[in-house]
Length: 321
Image (cartoon, rainbow, N blue to C red):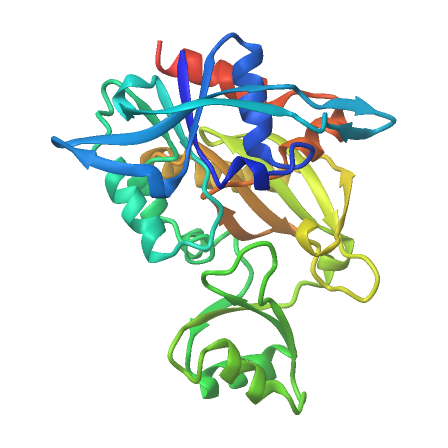
């Protein structure tokens, strides 16, 4: 197969951490051609989606003393060619958030990929439908107490009622902009004003889950089925467990409660064409559904001696055969 990956500039990727690289390595290991492009290199010509594509050859990372080790020159890129994306068997949309206006335009371009010829992972319509914070709200039996508002009085009353809460920007990523709010904090009004841009943008407020101290679990779902998990544990005085802010990772099992959450999500994810997803679970509660470029595969592979990328490629081969 020919598989294209829409990624951020490859020279900025971390081969020992980025899931996109793990997926590309798995595709190459299974004998598929790996091509890369970037969102600004997409276009529509004659009613078809095109991209400036480059064939890439990867030198896979190696596991040495429990750590991924990459060669200094870990990839080699061929010359750029312009081709219709329908010449590919599959396209992985793996541009990192935030979901900006240019990102949305890229998904509109991907609407012009013929689905009878090429599988797009994740579906552009699904990407537009699934804000990574708001999407979770429909699963009312799985989420903690949550509101979305830009009204300072509403937010303040909620925090005072709960005693403690977590504020999340709706367009944030990797833990950016997440704040711990506590009733009686003299800075509460200012934090809300800054986060909502003086009441112009809504934010998510979730009740604080004390279990967050024990970790924020990332579970990877493939076509609605959980295939692996990793626990991200806050370190030092940091209350966030995100790897991007220094959270340490540890192996973890998927509990029966988390299996049930996955079963609740599966029909909706499948309906929306969200095939490769990472959900976040704290203390048995779903907090986010990550669909743009969910990460965690390298950590799960390293801690559990598995190859999730190979599972993804096996599924892809079966689904488009």
